[in-house]
Amino acid sequence: MSVSVSPTGYGADGRRSGRGPSARHADEAYLRQTRELLDELDRVREDPDARERIYLKLTELHAPVARRIARQYRNRGEPEEDLRQVAMVACTTPSATSTPPTARSSSPTRCR
Image (tube, rainbow, N blue to C red; front, side, top):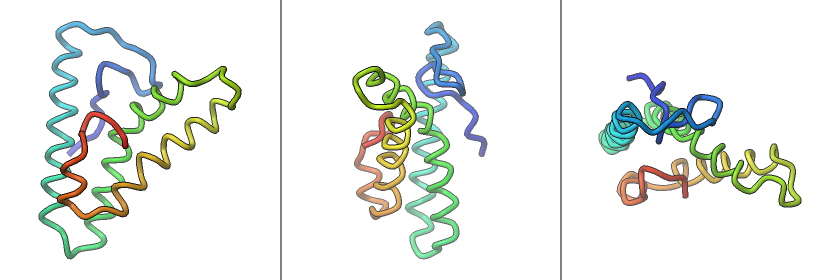
């Protein structure tokens, strides 16, 4: 499964790429990929290597969203790189510390 679909119409660099019909398709693909990864995570409860692989894919999938959120807070006294770092930590920590049912209950469209 590839994680190259840009979530919510943003490109790999985190810049807005437009919100036409193709953006809606990208949103649906993004949500579908998130659901598939969470389902897979539920199936491999006892395999730490598989769980680590899925966590990495989830992080890669949600990284553009984390970067976009960090960019919203730039120029407010903190370096943008620090904001991005915190956003990525916030994105990876819940998936690595929660059980699959807890991870499933969180919103797939944002990092918590």
